[in-house]
Length: 468
Image 1: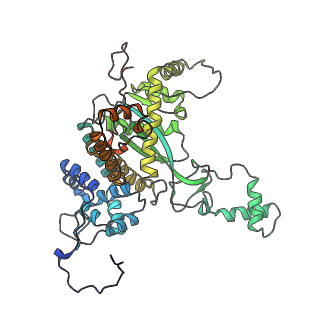
Image 2: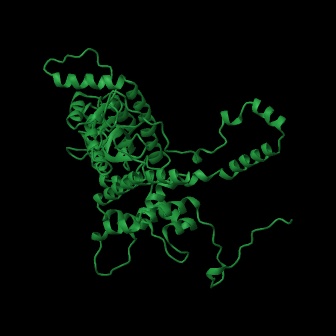
Image 3: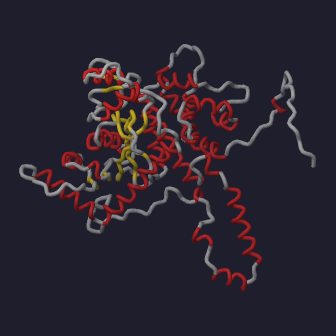
């Protein structure tokens, strides 16, 4: 066989569509389209977005189903920017087929995606998210009775070096120069100003500084210890399946005991669509523990499983109601059910962060403004829940899951053939050897039931649905 050589060829002026090579559609996106068509996704989103368009025919716009599908592609492919999504769609034949575009159609560019996002209201994106929550409940993948609440920080699309004073609008370098001159240093260099700045305490306070490009961003310390302008994303995750019930985006300088109120409110709004009782139990880490939070949860008829941080001996004089709620929460956390719920919380809540922000590409935002970012996060959560449904039906949750399937299945088939031709003595000897599958399962991870979790059995002494 001779080695082929690349020879540039002049393209013909006219090419028949029959002569164009048609690659096979991506199996994952084909399954996703089957699920969306079964749920009549396009008809639903067109009905929700009808009020944003004029009844008189104008310039053709991006169809609502195409816009939301492109954001789903951003989650599946791990693309954070809308410009990157537009490039990926224009370059991929399988994604064109997923969106319903032919080879001769021009795909939407990033400006069309951006304009459509600004056109649709935040409530429209939230309505799409809640509608898909109802679909999960119809499939039996969502109960929304016991939820875990946790938060993480997202790096904002703004630089720390661009912050300005809230009182007079001075930039950070100008402020340091004025401080140095007040200390008697004339015409200070950058090194001198930085040396003077290290001695000050609380030099980056959100009460004194703001970002001119993104006023909603706040100065915060990230998970890796760096200081950035950031936003705070908070999830409410159903512990029966791992599905996301609510997503909120709040200021990064607000504490967990403050932001949990809005997140629980959004979770209740989604849970009412699934069951009449709504959320009955909340599981969180010790950062959410406070007497006011526990009293508020009890007033909302919600049981809490929140570990208590070390605070030493406390004085309860005049706070008998708070004491009662704290002691009741302490007993629930120390019980067997409380320990199981904490294990599920640490697994499922962190998993939603990993999929949406690490592999989903949204750890650093490319949008500015809280509403704009929240619109994207809501559709990211829709894609996460959609992946649970597709995985439960077909065993795959993302397109990259199909990598290595053929090799693994070939190994399984060869092992089955060898066992078939073995004699009885050889099979008995093989059973005595350590099984390879005990150390490394042959069955790939995506073929297992992703949503299967050990059921949380209620206590025999209780009569409530949630078992407490």
